[in-house]
Length: 422
Ligand code: AMP
Ligand code: GLY
Image (cartoon, rainbow, N blue to C red; front, side, top):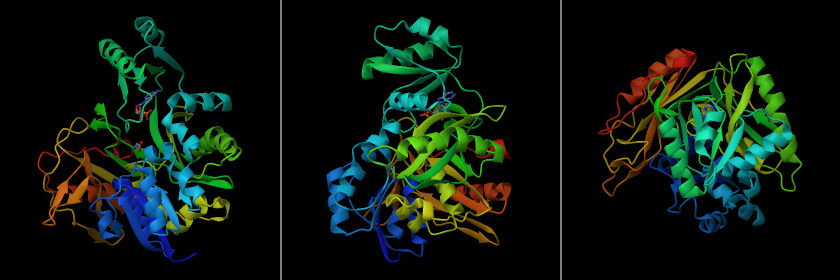
C-alpha cells in the first residue's frame, strides 16, 4: 500500500513523534493533524479542530478522504471516535469506546484483570460512608489513592503521609462520589506498548517513563517527564512473563469481544525484585513521552503497521526494530504540573545533532506559532529533547546537549532521566 493520506488526532509530543515516524514511512504520502502543534505543522497540515470534538474530526476525515486516522489521546476514544470513523468505513487506529473503557474506568479495568487472573494491586472502593481511617489502616503505607477520572496521570497520589492521604480521599469523594485505595506495589516501573488487533499483536521495545516532577522521583506525579528505551528492567525473562501472564490473556479476551480491539494497548507495569510483573494501569493509546523513544526504534514502515492494525491484519506485518537506545527529556512550563505559565517565547528548538550514529532533535508538544511566526509555549509539557544512539549513555548526553540549547523563561526539566539504567 502506498500513497497513504493519514490524519493524526491530538497535539502533544506523542503526536509529533507519530508524525515524524509516519513522514519517514514510504507508504505515507501526506499527513494531516488536528489540532496539532508547531512541530506537526512542519510535516503536514494542521487543522483547527479539537481532538475531543468527535463529530467534527469525523467530518474532517471524510472531507480529506484519509486512508487512516491515528488517534493520540484517550478522551476521543472513550467518546467513540473510532466507532464513528468505522461506521463511515474509515480505518481508525485506536479502540472502540468499549475497549477504551480499560483506560476510561479503572474499576472496569480491575474487574477485567480479576476475571482473567492478571496480576495487579488489590483495591478498595471508598464512598462517602466509608470509614477512611480504618480503610487506610488496612493497607500499610505508602498509600496509593486514585481518582477514577481521565486526569493525564495527575489523578493519583502516592504518599506515606496519613493526613495527605485522608485529605485527598475526602476531596476526591466529594467531587467524584468515590475513590480507589490501592495496595502499594514495590519495584521498578516499565511501559510496554502492544500493537493489537484480533489477528495478533506486536510488543514494541519496553520503555521507562519518569512520572514524578523532580529528580530522584520526588514531587507530584505528572504526565511524564522523560523516558528511555529499551528499559533493561524488562529482561528477556521478564518480557516472557509479561507476555504469558498479562498480554496473552488480555489479547485472548479482547479478540473475542463482539467488536475487536484495534490499536495500541499500553501496559503500565511494576516489576518486583524477583522479576514478577504486575499491571499498574492500562492505557488504550500510545504513551507520552514513551512514544518519543519507541517510534525511533521502529525501522520498518510505521504507516503500514498502524494501517494493518486498524484493518485487523497485524499478524501479517513483520516489524524490524533497531538495536539502538533512545531517550527523551521533557521541558515543562513554569508551574507544571500545577497551573502553568504559557504564551512565552521559545528559542533554540531547531537545534539538531547528527554525528555518526547519534541523532538528536526536538519533539514539540505544547507549542504554537503566533502571527509573527514566533514560537510560543502553549501547554504544561512544552517539548522534549530526544536522542537516538548506539548506547544509552551517549543518547543521554546528546539529549541533554540539545535541551541546554533551548530557552524558555521559567521552564524546568529533570536532570536524571534514565538514571536507573545508567
Ligand atoms: P496511574 O495513573 O495508575 O498510572 O498511576 C500513576 C503513577 O502512580 C504510576 O505510574 C506509579 O508511579 C504510581 N502508582 C500507581 N499505582 C501504584 C501502585 N499500586 N503501587 C505503586 N505505585 C503506583
Ligand atoms: N507517560 C504516561 C502516559 O502516557 O500515560
